[in-house]
Each structure stands twice: as structure tokens, then as C-alpha cells.
Image 1: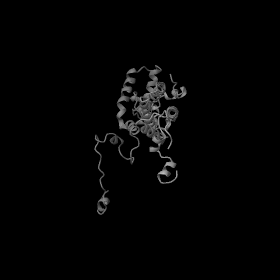
Image 2 (image 1 turned 30 degrees about the vertical axis):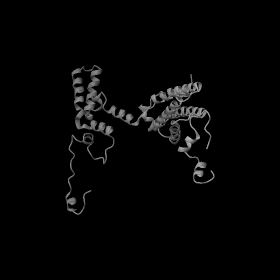
Image 3 (image 1 turned 180 degrees about the vertical axis):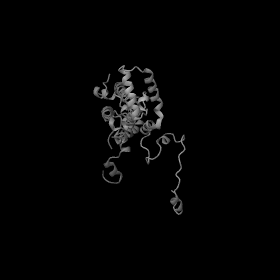
Image 4 (image 1 turned 45 degrees about the horizontal axis):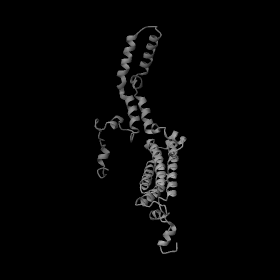
Length: 137
Length: 141
């Protein structure tokens, strides 16, 4: 029986998977953290006053100064429903998923779903209209 | 021109084998996938050549070596990941692959040399030496 020409040390290194090191995969993992299972915390949008108010009520409930489970449940539900307010969290998520957007002024959400949102046409200014000799590229 | 060894195993696959070896040399530093395929080609040619060998002992020797090399090559294929060919962060495993490929190639070349599986003429067709090029041009070589 012939001996293997591949040493044990090489075999050990080769047996390890490196596909997890793919930078694209790493980036998607980071993006996933923006919208993980706990959506109520990662994508909700509370105003500064709301955040302080809710924190104070939760502290009073946990310390049993005033037991208000119904109010806490209401706030938790409200947090979930606030996810889409202004869609800031979703824009962050989409920007991470899509990457940088060319020219920077386009709506990120329309880049992710081009067919779903009609792209606004640029309206030419009066000065541009007067420049009738210029060719449009 | 060099003399073909008396115990050489010349066959129609000799030229293909010589060409694959030269092409593998040209792929130095190339993708692991291409080089694994080329090693696969070379090993397949050697296995085919073993079929023509009349001497039972030599045939068994070559088949035994080829069997182990085939298992080693399969091990490399089993652990190959496409990311190795385009991601610099996988250099540790890529280096291990280089070691594995070099070991298999060296063993195959030793076998080719020992058993005379490729003649100098086979190599000359694909890779003329400078002396042959001068002779073809009408010089003295």
C-alpha cells in the first residue's frame, strides 16, 4: 500500500472551511443585524421624549413602584407599530443591503424595487428650455 | 534527438500527457481549480498508459501509486472551495493547497521519469528546445 503524499498538517488545514470569510457574506451578516428578529428594538423610531418616558415607566414597573403591565404591553405594541414611521430604519437596512447609491440623491427604496416605484422625471428649468441649441445626451 | 528508453511506455496518449504537463507548468500561480483539473488529466493519462504495460510487476507498481494519488486528488477536490481562487483572505488554505498540488505533481513526475511514460520527442513537439529551434532554422543546434 502506497503512502499518501499529502502530509497530515496540510490535511488539517485543508479540512477547514473558508467560505465564511467571503467579504460579501460578512457584509450581509452585518446588514442582518439591522433587521434581526427583535424588530421592535432595531427598527422602531421613538422620539427622545417618548424614549425617556417609556424608560421611566418601565423602570417603575420593574422596581414595582407602580405595577403597570398593561401600559408596558401597550408601549411594546406601539414600538412594533412604529417600525414604519418615516422609514428611517428601513432606509438604513436597504442602504446596507444595496450598497452605495450612485449620485446619492436617489431614493434608496426605489433603487431596491425599481418596478414598484415610478421614477420621477427631471423637469427641465426655463433656462434649460431656452438653451434649444444644446443637444440632450 | 534523445533516445526513447527501452522500457518506455509509448502510446497515443504520450503527446497528450506531455502537453498536459507543459500546460500545467504554464499555469504556475494560476487558479487552483484549473491546476486540479490538469493534474486530473495527467493522472488519467498515466492510468490509461498503465493498461498497456505487459510487465505485471511494473503495472502493479504504477497502479498502486496511481490509486493513492487518485485518493489524494479526491481529497483536494473534496476540500476545494471556489472562494480560494479570488479571495486574498483565504491565503492560509490556498498555501496548503499549493503544498498538496506540489506533492502530487512531484510524485507523478517521478513516476513518469522512472517508468519512461513520456519521451523527449513528445515534449519537443509542444515545447521545442532552443537547440532544436536552431536546427530547424538551418543552424547546427
